[in-house]
Every structure is written in C-alpha cells, then in structure tokens.
Length: 252
Ligand SMILES: [Fe+2]
Image (tube, rainbow, N blue to C red; front, side, top):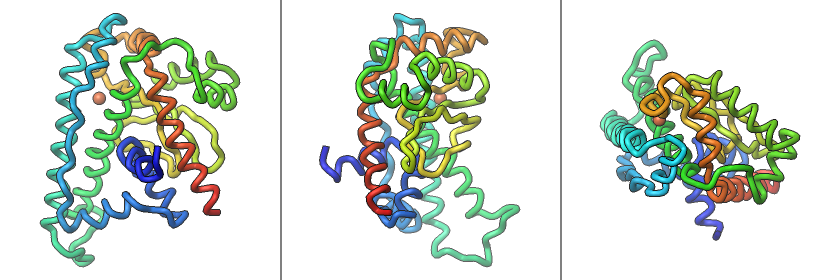
C-alpha cells in the first residue's frame, strides 16, 4: 500500500482522532483538508455500496433483513453529514459574536456533525469486519491481541462483556503512541473516542443491529458476531493503523 493510499484508508476508516493525533505531530493531510473545506462547501460524501459479503452472516442468524435496514440507517448518516456540511458552509465566515456554548447554530451543527460522521465511520468499520469466516484471529492481529490481552479468549470475553455494558458500540483500537490494543466502549456514534486510538474492529450493539433476529438477547448476537468476523479486513486495518503509529513515533 502506498503512503498516499494508507492515508486515504485511514481517513475513510478511522475516527477524527487520527487527524488529531497526526495534527499534534504536524502530520495532518486529509483531516486538514476536510476541516478547511467545511466552510467552503465540501464535496458530498458518498455512501459505500451495500457490502455483499454481509449476506454470509445469514448462516449464524444475522439476517439480510437486518443488514438491509441497517444499510439504510447508514445511508441516513451520510445524508446528514452532507446536510450539515452544507449548513456549515451557509454560515459563512466564522463569527465569534454569534457563537454560544448554550445554544448557537455553530455549536449545534458541530455537535451533530460528530454524531453523523461518527455514524458513517462506525458503520463502514462494522460492515467491513463482518461476513468473514470468524473463529480465532490469525495473522498480525492474533499476535497483537495476545500481547495486549494475554490470550484470544481473554480478548473475546472482554469484548463480549463490554458489548453488554455498552449502549451503542465497542471498538477494538490501536493506541498510536504505545501500540497497545483496548476494547473501547461507546454509548453513541460520537462517544467516547480517545485521541490517537485507531479502531480496527467494531461491533454495533445498538438494538437495531440485532433486535429483528435475536430480540433482547444481545449476548446471542455477540456470540454470532464472533463467528463471522472478517479477520483479513481486521488485519488490513491493523496494518494501516501500525503505519500511522510508526509515523507518529518517527515524528517525536
Ligand atoms: Fe447501527
């Protein structure tokens, strides 16, 4: 993967946290371009096509119906990102006299922008790491999981418990600074990202991700999820995140 494509991949698949981490190191490229374009009218974000490999999860009980509904929800986030970008652009030049921490157009648009864009990135990550052969991790991610959690089973147990404790998401993410992996908890599309932590695997535990197929039995949904993780996709995400981590370390 070229330097350029690594950055493109990271911009697509990781949180704004990557941009912040890179910014701190003076390495921002795509994130800079994005924030600068917000007030100038950014190009519309495009939804990814429906990932056909999602159909593979039918065998473990995560149905096509759920994915069809879920994909429409995802497209809704893309639409809202574009709507908010348009409205931010319409505000014109930044005006501190109109900004207000209790309520102001700028505040509300930027808060909901983080929710909408988080919704896009979270779902692209989740759709990307579904539809595989599941089972135990392989490749570099297997080694990284063992190094941070002691064993694959420890990681799996922690992800499941965190998934029960969460109200929206769990992300397995690489800390760019120390290279560790951690299962981060999220209650919404925009909580609680950690600066410099790049997600390499995500599981959506909002009810819409499983209620059609499993009712209230979220634990059964998580068990099914483990059976259809696409470890090749997770390994590709880890490779990109490690490249960013190397860049951060080299810049210090
Ligand atoms: Fe979702």
